Length: 234
Ligand code: SF4
Ligand code: SF4
Ligand code: FES
Image (cartoon, helix red, strand yellow):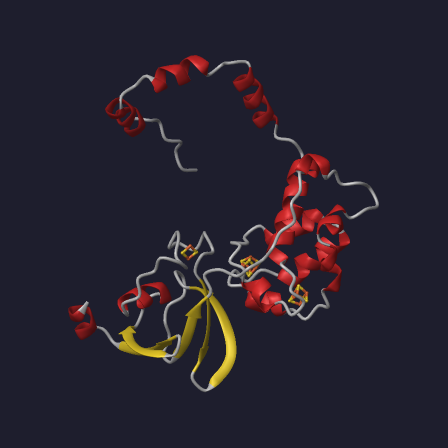
């Protein structure tokens, strides 16, 4: 690390108020580790998929709060930052079988009636590191338009920042998850291939193959895995 610091331009950052100089170009996550933090929370996939590394920052002399994923965002000079690896957000308990969407009713409101207290401040949208139109999918959820919620919230990583910033204590991502489940379970067209495969499994089509695999040694399994046919990229 010392050699790296000798050859790269360094920038000043402040982690929870503490000053560090780190090489320019590092992600916030790498900069935290460079600074000596051992990340056991607020880190997961390191690739922008899991939402574990939600980070809030501002700049010296500019108090406006900004939001990012630590594994994706590069450090910038004079960044004041901290991670929010977990934000408490409760979700309703429900069974999808019991929650059938009914014409003229918004099933989601049975789970989350507090959605109606959303007053359109747009804080949630401004805080989303995925640049999702969070307030828009909240409106769609309140209208019962699950297709729209599904489309607008599909890239949600469940980082929790929108919930952290909602002045009404709403959890937009939790509500969107329930809406996508409702759509998937009851409204989206069924996948014929999926249904066919489930039927084949139930009829025992793969039982013999599974039994054979269960009796292989670890090395035989590994060999089989390494030699498997991989679907060509399209
Ligand atoms: S919608 Fe909320 S939980 Fe999902 S990525 Fe955006 S801020 Fe994070
Ligand atoms: S932050 Fe909360 S109140 Fe504001 S628009 Fe989003 S969900 Fe509604
Ligand atoms: S560590 Fe998974 S999104 Fe950053």
